[in-house]
Amino acid sequence: MANFFEPPRYIAVEGPIRVGKSTLARAIADQLHGQLVHEPEDNPFLNAFYEGEAGAAFQAQMAFLVERYEQLRPLEVGPNSRKVIVTDYIFEKDKLFANLNLSDAELTVYDRYYRMFRASLPVPDLVIYLQASTDVLRKRLRRKNAPSERAISDDYMEEVVKAYEHFFFHYTSSDLLVVNTSEIDFVESGQELQQLVRRISEPVKGTQYFLPLGKDEAASA
Image 1 (cartoon, rainbow, N blue to C red):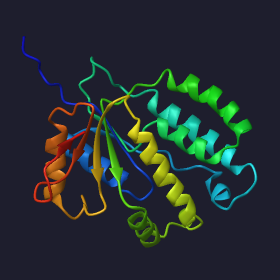
Image 2: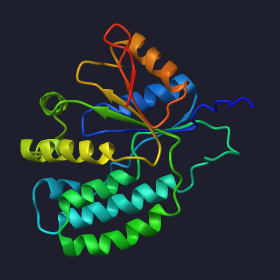
Image 3: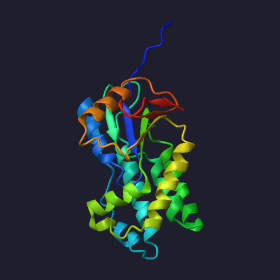
Image 4: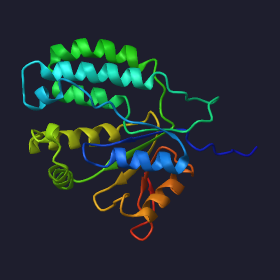
């Protein structure tokens, strides 16, 4: 009996800060006429955390956890939904940053809520993990020059990049398409964006890698 491919309807774009998550998620949602879901950004504790204030890491993390849960919980996804949804984050990123920033005692409290929230959330059909070198991300961070990001140190950026690499090396919850954006600009190059959109309309099984035609062919892990 033939196996019919069902294109992903819940697509999440992930990666470290300034890798281009929001830009790509918006472009994919536009191309697929999908619903775009942006990560919550209005966190009243974030500036204090970047400035190193005591207790701010736990406050910021718990605020993000609740906001992300409340945003993802109502999404209309699953086999009975025909809607395409594109998010610029996955819920698991919250735990990734909690492990980086919280003390053991804080993590014990955090984990109780994380496990409870995670159990009731849908899992993406496809995750697109955007990579870039730390040097590239630092340059983009300086170019953006967002007030809330000026206190991000080079050491912290390095830790975040390594945490993402480790997390996605072991990621198995969804099919995964890895894209290195160090030399790819989906804003400036519509051709590369179209190639990526075509790629996600084809089967992605396990972990696979995308490179635009003209650079190399896409490869499978």
